[in-house]
Length: 400
Picture 1 (tube, rainbow, N blue to C red):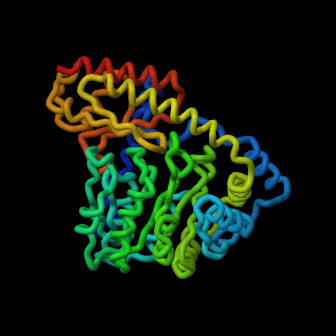
Picture 2: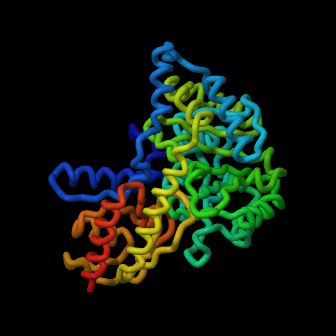
């Protein structure tokens, strides 16, 4: 009998973390590396939020908090859902966890039994299927192709639903593609779900505020109010408020589900950092004037990266609606020979050779469930992005 759990053999390490660490290691060795692998804004947390945290420390807000979060934050979350999404969640119907990933894990752990199925549109954030497996469920993947802008279509969703389906996880705007669902596109999905009342909806809205042009963000229970009683609406402060290290995710949902998640969290972590929670109150209730600045910068970066990648030999890059990722296809590069002499058989080969040859770190699309593509995060400076894209163009031009 082995010491370690058999569950570890059923899950894979996070490819984004692996690639990011490899880039750090190469930098430490003196290599000139541009890392486009990490999903983290390069902006600093706004000053008003930092000052709120400092004030909380000075007030002595440094003790344990209630498992589901401090009352002022849960009230702020309720106001946010009402103000921005038209959703009525009482403070008791909200929960605060140690990041969005923790919210999702709590929900799955509280609801999944062995064999329960969870529909995950692919490409997907790398952690979704691994969390489902850790919680005893079975991921069911539905491919969302580039021809459909990486968005789930109603017919394949309908075919994927079985009597064992318990959840569908929806992420808009998406990590890794940046694709976001319009109101009409979301309505087509919710119409299918209305025909299957046993299926719950877990919606990951972490990139809600990072949409571009005149795109209007919507969330499922907002588009179809009849889904309210079987939807968990998850969000957080990591991306829109540049608070990745503060580790605050939150959700609103039916009371019995929130109670179950509170029960699970009480035996896991209890409440998250008190200081971070007070900072999050300010993030949600305070001035939002940094958001247009963030959006403008990210939109400029998106346009730059898409334009330069589409000028690269063998690459095709769609224009995403949101987040800070692009997901170009490298299908035409498969079968070509890199400068090292290696024949590129997969998208993983492509990103590995790109890193070795040009010092650009990206994440292979197969780790997100759909390739041959790769993910680039443009959450870095315009100068770094232009340099990186020039290197990508040079690498693609060197393939034979």
